[in-house]
Image (cartoon, rainbow, N blue to C red; front, side, top):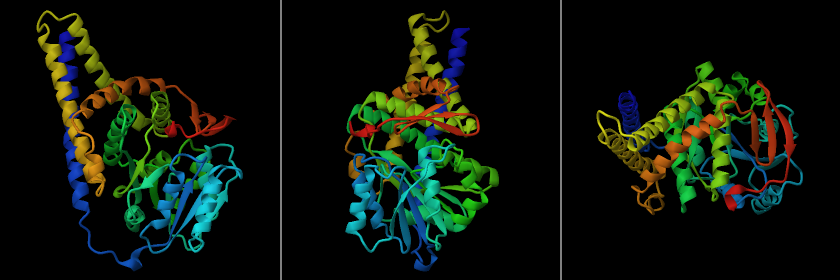
Length: 404
């Protein structure tokens, strides 16, 4: 009986993995093809208000914010927003304003709203300060480095047709914890592209669409901004379009404990507003974990029909598919990061098969751990999800975890 179950489960898992390989290759080819666009019409670009919530003097903050001052875009403003008048990010922002007195930079100190997370209350406060000329609202994270000067154009481009636009992040790791994070997040990148989700570190929407989706109301009691935007866009039939030119480079975690805390919170922030997305991930996580567990069980206690042949073949199939997935990850990185091919190629792609397997095995315990969770800890603040809003419980001094 156990051998039959193992044969079926492993067979399904390998097929799922191979379908992911095929999907990744299709996505990479589509991204490369999309680069060949006709020349831009300067008159076609609407005025953009770019909102960047900040908290703390995190590693690389000055460089990341400065990159937003160099977008190749004809008319835009930047609103840096914090929750406290004494936030350590403010001196960094003020230095940028002093160094670039002719650029339209605003600093907004946001009042905290009682029923949403601090980042979202910051964004809502910034919305009240946007220029009257604003036609498109764009959002970025302070810990992401825009890929190049064309980032804002590529992010705004899908909004010209009324779509919600989103980019994503990528990690260029240098140690094993960072490689594990990069592997985990690159799997999410493929999921993000295929299922038209939204990532808050690079998202844009026309102001009139934002108002039609009633996002001020939804965000005012939301645990996160991006998944809620995606959910409301899906409900209203507004297409969500991935903008491959709007990628950001992010600094990975350097400690295993902080990485595990991060992926657990990210998973919870998907489950709370969009249980269907979470359920799909939980199904895949369970399938992967069960496949490896059944093969290991049959290695320890071989079955009467196939002996060791079945678990060895099963593990061989799983590891072979993981090797292909590592190769597709490399192809996807080259497609998404033009101009950074040397950085992508610094490490060989095939050792990432090990990290693919580790990420697969991590998925189930992480997903299972948040099935009934309601507590969110985010940048030093603890929130509790009440079912339709969040309640701020406590706050403590916070330091950027990726810097240590």
